[in-house]
Image (cartoon, rainbow over the protein chains, first blue to last red):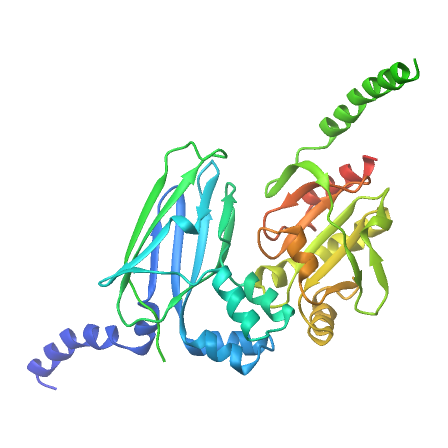
Length: 184
Length: 175
């Protein structure tokens, strides 16, 4: 190896590492973390979703429906000394084309009813979702999925959290950019 | 006159009810003290087909726990519940370990490893769990001997540790 080849490798190696599959798998994690709140969004692949729900005995038609969506596992930790309100109606997802409407519990209830899905599987499915509204206590951590229509475009989340039990505290606003779904 | 006597009796009783509330211990970290409310009904079969009715456990504190095998924090917490139960089951604590919407095979295999001495109640369609409206899974509530929900745990807790055992023992002394 001559010195030219050596320097080429020296500079090229970090670039090669950056496009490795491992890095690709982690680049859809978005996180906000300060002294009051830690919010993590992790996009799930259709294979991960299928494997999880197959393990719970879900039917193929249910899994096929779920695999068509964009699943994001959200982790929320209240690190502050006061109540922090999660309210998904105060979460706005937008991309280049405008607002992306989240597929909420009401939507899924209607879908599963139409598909005659057993109550047990509907119940399990609901427990894997992030609560719509929850008063996070000090040091409480919860996680769960949010589901968006599948899209190739990166999107932005703007989330607002009210604070204090009566929501009278100063609201916390968080913006996470360049979030992406994971595709097959 | 009868009404007056009744009123006096009620008024005399109120301070005792109030002081009973105040005497309940402050919980350790991760447990919330609630404004008391009646525990939603739990009438379920356990994994062996035996009936369980929460209303028949009155006069005892009841540890009501909702879980599912697919939930990571539930898997982590269950051995702690087993260890706690080994101690406090003999001291008068009752337990309702409610599995949310899984089948017998899954529950049997899970508990054989993580909590072999506790009978699971099978909430097969998940509707009992829904009525309790847990914040998430796992979820634990402590129900007093009058059937009132008094405390709620946030997520999984180290129930086998001295802090939580002392707290639960303190409750068991409150009738």
